[in-house]
Image (cartoon, rainbow, N blue to C red; front, side):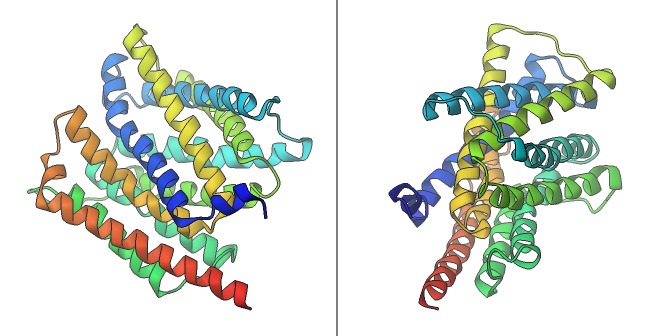
Length: 318
């Protein structure tokens, strides 16, 4: 095992890099809302929202490939046998996930969408443990997931609570998008053993983004208002995906899926906090409720990582 691989397995390195990814993804929540305003996209204009997302991901793919090539000092290009993996990953991680998410978001509240999205951590760990047998599913991981999920629910609750109405095109699509994301996490783990995770991320983003652009245009979507500010926001959002997904993929390659995926509970937490700062909304971010939520998520992350570390020690002693 190389020194680089050893470092990427250390708990503090995983925590630092995973939290950076979650902070970047969390910043996407308010940035998307700001982007809709700058590009004059109405809240019910799903076609333009998909087009906007497609432009973001296509650009993210290009930036990932360019930056990755500069760092590697050679052009990043998938091996001939890797193209099937690129298309499968693009289908699960970008095309299906975000098409379902944007349609679902148009038919439910942001609070319910955020809570349902957090279930992707459960699904990723369950798929990794029960379907692909990459790791063991013990009480620590189950408890950690429950605590983390409780923290996400708590920080998204307001005085009015959450209504119980459900629809397949709303909550149903959001739930299906989380299954797609969870599947992509396990696929990155699997495919990362045979291909550079940065290469996989770059090309799957570019292909997925182009498909979403075509879908958005065919559905009648359009983008207006390409000012300097709007363009820079789009570039930043592309960089969010390029940097975060590349780092996430590298972490998944060298660590158990559960050890990395559990940090996903921090995405909506960061999203709420950054929305409170940038959009001056959701005041619960800086209350006792927000603090308890952060504590629950932190304990949940600790519980999952503790079990992952114990499992690794047991495997070494066998």
